[in-house]
Amino acid sequence: MQTSIVRTPDGSELHSESFGSPGDPPVLLIMGATASGRWWPDDFCRKLAESGIYVIRYDHRDTGESRKYPAGEPGYSLSDLAADALAVLDAHGVARAHFAGMSLGGWLTQMLALTYPERVLSITLIASEPLATPDPEIPPIDPAVIAYHSAAGELDWTDRSAVVAFQAGLWRLLTGPERSFDVDSVAAIASADFERCGDPLAMFNHAMLGGDPEEMQPLLDRLGEIRVPVLIVHGTHDLVLSYEHALRSAKRMPHARLLTLQGAGHELNRQDWPEIIEGMRSAFGQADSKRP
Image (cartoon, rainbow, N blue to C red):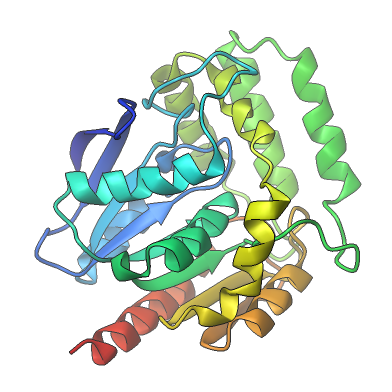
């Protein structure tokens, strides 16, 4: 694994890591809200790299080792987070790449595909949703998840053990009924993140980045314009973004392939890695076959 510091046009510093050979086809992994790049597990990244892919992951602002802002005062927008992805590619000398985004990372991936199509070879959306304001016809986030997050205000965020236990409890809740929960792996990532980030509360600045309806609705209306291969990966028991979001995304994007993970939740579970990696590589191959 190689580590790099990326400087964005506005002077922010982002922490990025890469696996594999820069000569292989590149994929940029974009994690969801409040999560650093380490939530793309090392073993997942290595397996992708071993299959002949140059893998790049990075920490969003306010996560991991990237720049922190005062809690409650994010000095950036969703558009800035999307542009950060391009700054990471530039720092690695990559002109065009495959993109894979989980949850909020899927939003950013769609924004990039529509705003900077010349940089995008294919997109993979994992446990994500189509760009837009909330749809009243789609089930909202499960009340159990909201209730769990409400306890965050009572937590001592300077207590490493408490923070790790909170993170582990959340991911246990989000694990699907037909998946095993690897508490040791989750706790290891959460513990390492606590050491790396400096201010764990800063990650909740992401909760203040609701998409501007005037910006997002036009993008939603253009999802059908995405011409690169699209892979949509979604669990049938996702408590954060219900499976209906995947069906809606697939309907909006005619070039999409839907990979349904029966019994999976809002997670990147080791049990699903072989199928996800196979699907990603298939999308990469489709993109390569279309290039002149």
